[in-house]
Image (tube, rainbow, N blue to C red):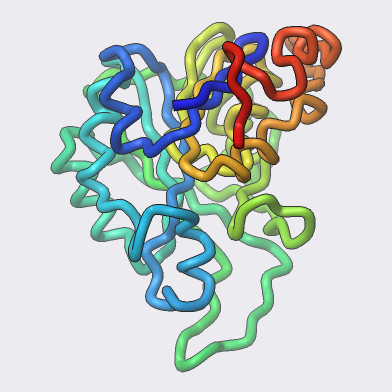
Length: 259
């Protein structure tokens, strides 16, 4: 495995089904991830989104049980999926040991409304929520005064149609919102399907430590752009690009380079 690391953030290049087994139990407060969707149009969009996991996306049971193990007792997991797979993911979360809580609906504004092949085009996507126990950490203060688009179970934001690193890339505001709700400053956040490293960027913006796993080396390299981590938030947490550049050395980690 190859590691990319910086100030409070690391990206492990490998298959999460194997990498997760190497992580310590109960070491993460929150898991936010957007795995390849299990969609019917596999020969089209699905195969591209799957990256290099083989002929189909990883089965839920191949990674959810390990997510349960590495999550702290008062932690939460958020998993993005397509509407057609809500039932399957719900059951898989329960089978892995999670207690399923009411999901979040991401309302995708400005999405085309034309029905395709007998299907109504979906204007929302679910973000499933599981907790490890009946007592979980939840901070509602980041939602105060945000209105219906932020304070409830519906998050309104357009999809990313331009400059996306992976198909179906989620807006950073979505992961930022959830990270602030489910973690405190200094907590550790995990994304087993890091893709564009959006979750990692959101976590560092708000002063959380972040670990990502990505199977595709090229996507990992593009997503782990040092300039994207040079952000400032209201917490005054700032990551200086020159410091990261010195530590990483143009993508080098422990003498290795992604290739």
